[in-house]
Image (tube, rainbow, N blue to C red; front, side, top):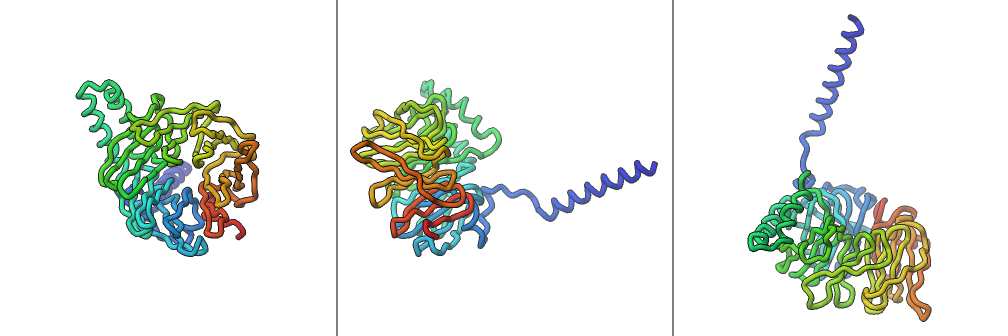
Length: 355
């Protein structure tokens, strides 16, 4: 009897402890409805994207953290952000107008260079709007749209969880977001309204759209299974470019002379004819490459999950890659300081070459 009583007491103590913890923690608040918390540690938390807004640097990452710097990355100020979801990508077509996107289908807009942000779109609205759009097309006899009406709801059966992985604005009005499972939208009014573009990507297997970059006059989206999607100026559809690679490309960068698609295990594929033909570069390091920026000297600097920076050059012998020292922790994004030196973001916040 004594052991039974003791057991019951222990059980009740456990229940009371759980109830107390729940009371202290408070009710669950969806990160879509919870503003990012101000924290002096934000610049040392996990950050995933970095870009320039004119002379200003802007970074974004976990818990809705966005920070900006007006002294070339020496000091940082945390922005006001209305959500606390993970943010994965940034685009500033002008020094003042910018967009951030990330998990839960979030798209944010700033009109003051990244100091204050407003929510333009989330996965709850996207789920409703995309299905309604394709129901309209299906009603007119579009069989591809009818298939999307059946398939798209799977993306939101557990809530507004699918992330945007790339955002790219050409100017203050026209831009794209793309992400998991071929989800894609376009806006032509600065994000006030969005039109589905999933049916405009030659992607029947719904591969992830891991980034969106404008290189020259074309838009490129690196994807899985060694595929890169391209839409040239004047076109209204992304076509699939095949490489000999079977893995995932996380990003793409380049100029009119050279395209570089990069991804797992140090993989870099290069093209000197805007994606018509691709060749693999010898891996400089055997770890994932996560981001890229073009240096003032014409080299391309690729950030690595090891913290290294890989420099890719193009000479008479073709493109070649060489690893350099970098951050002491994994990098997820890279930009250039005013001095031409790389500034990276990643696992432990912000890293600046030479510091």
